[in-house]
Length: 204
Image 1 (cartoon, rainbow, N blue to C red):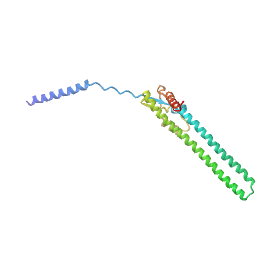
Image 2: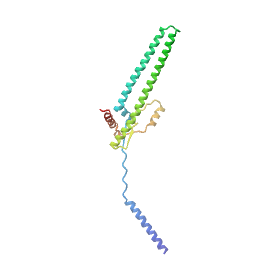
Image 3: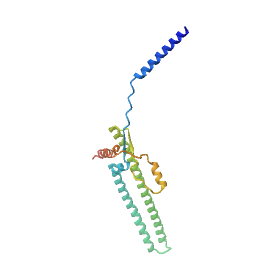
Image 4: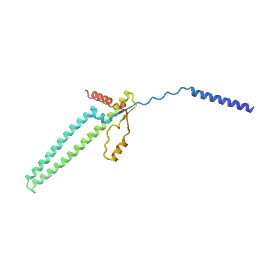
């Protein structure tokens, strides 16, 4: 009796296992995930080819020229005051006053030079940052339009500067791409996309 019960339980267990196994075999396989679509861009070429950055560079150049004129005017004032010193009697109150005036002019010149250098450097850094933000935003919108999942910077393109072994190794270690097929490059398309945007935003 016990043997019959044992065989009955074992038969039921085998049948249940067969049903589970059959369901697993007959269950349709989940569709394979589609591979991600990747593209690359040459960042340096993008910077140098978009009208937005070119316009900003033109504005910075104009600002630098205006600041240079102010520095030159301050330099001319210092030279004029230096020339006037010879016309005063040594040790006179007039000479002392002229010396003070010259010292003030020299201080103004140095302040003008420092301000001009700092202002231009700030504007160049701001232009790089703002343009990078614009490139990121444009790359996102371009990727959404064209169906790309990722747009990566192809850092295998720029030449390395073999200054010394340590710096060369740093440049090699900093790179993430060994090779990228040129067919995946969308730099020109992104540049055209951004230039159209800039033209529309500028009312062109």
